[in-house]
Amino acid sequence: MDWDRIRIFLEVARTGQILGAAKRLKLNHATVARQLTALEEDLKTKLVNRATTGSSLTSAGVALLGAAERAESEFLRVGAEFIQASDRLDGTVRVGAPDGLGNYFLVDKLGAFADGKPRFQNTVGAASPHVLAC
Image 1 (cartoon, rainbow, N blue to C red):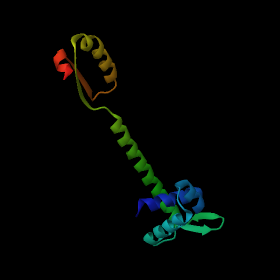
Image 2 (image 1 turned 90 degrees about the horizontal axis):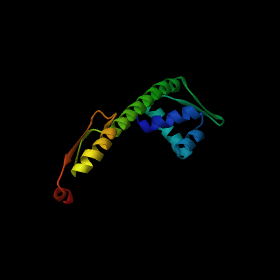
Image 3 (image 1 turned 180 degrees about the vertical axis):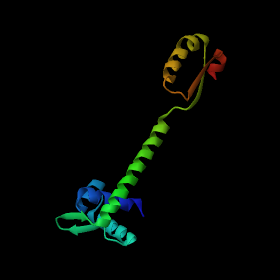
Image 4 (image 1 turned 120 degrees about the vertical axis):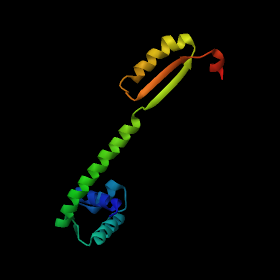
């Protein structure tokens, strides 16, 4: 099964109209109808009763709707986990700074920054002006 076709089916089921689904998906209504027909042909079953006043799901459509919504929910959950994981800071930052700046300013600032980030480590070391100029 093609997920894009399932996504189109979900919108048709939710809006009750091919035209409404097309507008929400920003697709041409003929494309939505064609993809819905292709999904029905792939599954060898009618999913949607089409009428001039709108669309309704067949019993097979109702069954697919439940499965498709569960799959969509799982995709959204996993996607959110990936996004959340990519936002986490992970690793070590090493800063070389002159004694005064490193000891009296950066240590406090980096410490505050690291709070709540258990996988973030920082190291502040003294560096001579010659090293810093490079």
